[in-house]
Length: 203
Image (cartoon, rainbow, N blue to C red; front, side, top):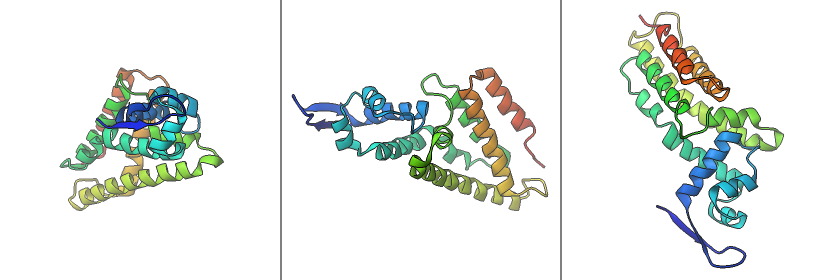
């Protein structure tokens, strides 16, 4: 537990758990996107004052970066194990099942934090969009390398490319998040994943 003691404008020093506060901020960003997450809503959810937020996390953009780190560390951990699957289809299944688990969880907001934030970013938040896009590109590059290996091993039908497979897979995962955010049921999301795996190209 990470406890932070900061002095508010008046009164006794305020103590709060940094990890819990960051988790609360993550839920706000995840639910609303970067721009729509107001400082008032963030501080209320985190249980801290604005001066305490600035002292502990920096400004709103710095807080979002820390929340994005937490999101990747906790919510996207399945992506690392997915790359260790023995086949390309196994990689796709682990990624899709992992994404499905997030979207069907009762503990978290629906949708994908990266998709929500990028879709909502205006000109004033271009740096946020650029950061999300950079992180997504890094993840996609890792999957491309894994699928290139699968192609070299003869695990993928002829004529397909690693970048093409990754774009297809990412489209499925983003579609899963968007449909979840639009109110699709767990059963409907499971049908999407099951159908996607049936039609996944294999030799």
